[in-house]
Image 1: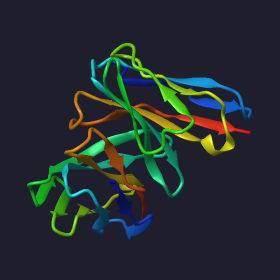
Image 2: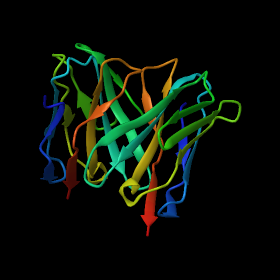
Image 3: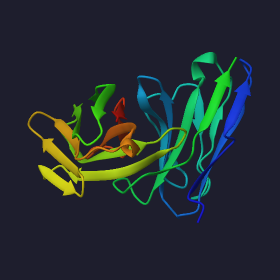
Length: 112
Length: 111
């Protein structure tokens, strides 16, 4: 049972490049979300999804897109990377909105 | 909107009790959580409390909730060096499906 798998673990991008952070879960969870973690700011919610085909914005959605075509996958897209998007990104999933959230190991992204 | 605040650092001696505090603004919060993050890892759920409870105990962990003041605390009894980590409180709002985290408290345990 792999849980929540994020790829890649590390990534360096140049300003203006695009990329997709992958997140997959094998627990048949309906609820998935993306957070970014920055020093002194905790975890901030970027986007979340309550089920396949449904996504919504969190606290800091600008510069990020998501889609949820399957229950298992919830990719996060950066269309034009900026240095302000340098952060550690975490994907999480849970059976429902109020159940325990399971986190991936994180993706450390640096934009230069 | 929702806002969750924590102090950034706490340092305690091994064997003492640790108390980590959290304040939140959303009065419609239904569930409040404590998560632990060890270095280089994701977060793991430690414990949670329903908003209609004022205390929950789970082995060395005691959660206190003052709903009137919107204040949540986590007490760790007999703190060990293995408890050194970042502790996040989080709230789930009744009105939304968002899980909102606090800024995190870095707990350092020294011998």
